[in-house]
Every structure is written in C-alpha cells, then in structure tokens.
Length: 491
Image 1 (cartoon, rainbow, N blue to C red):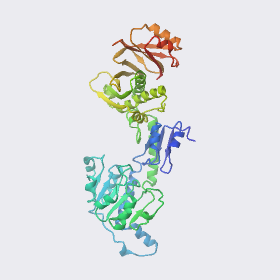
Image 2 (image 1 turned 120 degrees about the horizontal axis):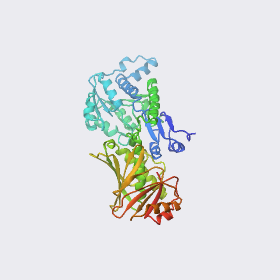
Image 3 (image 1 turned 30 degrees about the horizontal axis):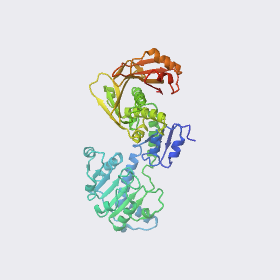
Image 4 (image 1 turned 180 degrees about the vertical axis):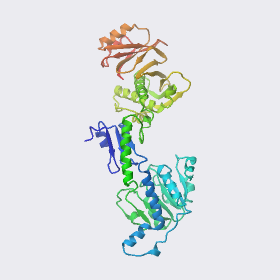
C-alpha cells in the first residue's frame, strides 16, 4: 500500500510504526498535521533518511484557549455546578469559587502556547511566572513573564500549567516531591502531554488537599483504562480536545500541505524535527555544495582505506560557506560512509542522505567537526581525515557552476581540476608515470576513459582521476600493475 508514495500525512490517531516506514520504499517525508509526533517512530524514520515534519504553530491558539478555559473552570467549579443543574439540583451555596485577579500563574514551557496563555491570563489580573531552559529571561520579559527556576516557582504558584513535550527531562515533572513544595491547594492544568504530571501523585495530592483541583486534557493512556482520576470531584477532564477546533484542524491541514509543497519546491524547510542539516541546504545555489561534500567524502574514503579514520573535519573557505557547516558535515559523511559500506559490506544503508548520515556517523565512532576560515578570496572546502595513528589525509574541492571539482589531495594540486561526477577511477602513484601508460592499462581493464586529471608530484606521490563513460569492474589488474593503487567509484 505504501510502496509507491513519497509522502505520508497523518493526524494523531494514526500510528506510523517502523514497519510502516520500512514498507514505504519511496517514502521521503512524513507529516503530522498537529504538534506532537508521539505516534510516529521518529528514530526509525531518521535511520531510513525520512524527514519527519509537524505543524508547530497550527493549533497554538486553540490549545492556549483550552488551557485558559480549564483554569477559569477550576476557579468556579463549573464542571460540578453544571452537572448539579443537569441532575435537577440548585446547589448555589456548595460551589463557592475564587477570583483569578491577583493570583500567580506558573507556566512551565514558555514557547508559543505558553506565551499565548500568559498574555490571555494577564488580562484577568494574574501575575505570570515561568520556566523554560530555551527561552531567555529577556525574551519572557517581553510578554511580562518573570523567568524563574523550578525551585523558585513551586512555592509561589497558585496555578501551574505545563506546556512541554514528554521527554525524559519532563516525565513526572510534577510528582510527590514537587507537590510537597507547592502552596497547599495549588491548582494544576495539563493540556500538553500525559505523563508530565505523574497521575498517581496527582491523585494523592487531590485526596490530601495539597492540590486543590486539576484540569486535565491529556492522559498517559488515551483513552484511560482507569477513570479514577478523571472522575475525582476536583478534576475537570476533557478527552484531548486542545486542538479540537474547526479552525485549528483546518489550519494544521493547510499548514502541513503547504510545508510539503515548499520543501518539494526547495523554498523552505519548516517544522522538520529530525533534519537540522537540511535547514541551509535547500536553495539551488547550495545543492552543488551538498553534492561536493558527498563526493569529497567518497574520495576521502577511497584514499584512506588503510588509515582507520577516527576524526573528520570539514574546513570551509569563502563567505558563501559561512553557514554551511551542518549540511557539509552530513553530506561528507554520507559519501564517506556509503563508500566504506560498499567496500566493507557493512550494514550502513546505501541510501544515506542529510537526514540519516549524522546518526550513522555517530554510530561509526567517527568524530566530526566543522570550521569556517575567514579571509579567503576563494570558495572551497577542505576535508581533513585523521587516522587512529595521527596521520591525516587532506582532500580539497570546489564548485564551478553546477560541477563538483577536486582541487588537490595531500597538497598535490591538480593542474586542471578533476570533475567528480559519474563513474571514475581515483588512483595514486609514487613516481612520474606517462599518462599514456595509465590510460592504456585502464583500457585493458575495460575502462572507457573520457577524461583525465592529474596532480603535481609532491613528497613522492601524486594523484589522478580518470572519468569513464561506463562503470568498470573493481579488479583493475592491469592498472594496478602501473599505478600504486587504483579505486573505481560511482560519484
């Protein structure tokens, strides 16, 4: 079913498992019409080189409004009061509420939704404080929210609302220990992800009175198998309705479709959660540099087969490459690992790209870095591959128009830059050898040589690239009897 599609768009109820991802042989992108990607196996997608994208802003207003609704409902017992009326009772004295004016609202997570909640609740006269490791105090001050540590927040808050993803650092953020540090009767709201508030601890706090009420839109299990918490008299519970508005659902659907189109047209990459290397790599002017990185990585891999590479550094020269580090490292490692995998029969996938190359590079144990050098009049890239013994192989290249060119290897400059496209043979020699002898030997091995580029002889070595009209078998018996070492490759 999935094999012929390049893209897949889902909402929250559809599970995109590793099996689904692996079945999509042409799959390149998965889009979530909404914010959370809990229903997508992002790790499996990344390993396969598939972009995972969400619509981070589409449901912001709806989620913020729902949060504010629950805060207001908690202060006036609206859920219980409404149920009482439906049961034919006029329990006016039973449902004494409290004002929001003058109360302190703590917002854990000051991103898009947290900010909108702050602005709306300030209109009720609430003081807003918050915590977010990413948002600076200066940024939160712009929407009148004081940035504090969690330890400072707990004793000050009358209300706490959480707006964080569920990650190891936020799981059970509110638990027995944190409830004990809060004001007695603190009220909490969770419209983010089930599990940020520990449900068993919340129930204990409600029973003891340490927590005066909770507004819950999300749960650890949805739907819950146990409704004890949802049925508690001091809990207002809704079935994950934060983004369930006509406007939000329309907006996220339009957003994800537009994001797909923008990516396909190379205009922008927005909402991708697993492809940082793609951020600056979409423009037509950038694409040849992405290809150059891949091909320099492949050449470096061919020429360093006996070095046991431990470190790869990408050094960039020229103003156009100032922000190219992330995608050049990824493309270099894609070419390096792909070539290594073919040669060694490793399990690294041949379809390495800017999405999955970083994780396979990390898995391989190779340390990667990038450096930009100021002051160069020329624009080019140098790859330094360091072996376990400290030896270094240097490969330099540039882009001419849309063509990728090899400028030098180990400081041996090519008189005419070698074109790095199509089928090639990369070779090394340790003395001057007539070019006619090299071409003749390659021809005996079945190579149809289209062009030749050779470097200068330096430190008793030189390098060359034979551009071929067709692939050639890896044997190269005749050529290897003439040159020191020769490697066929498809670049």
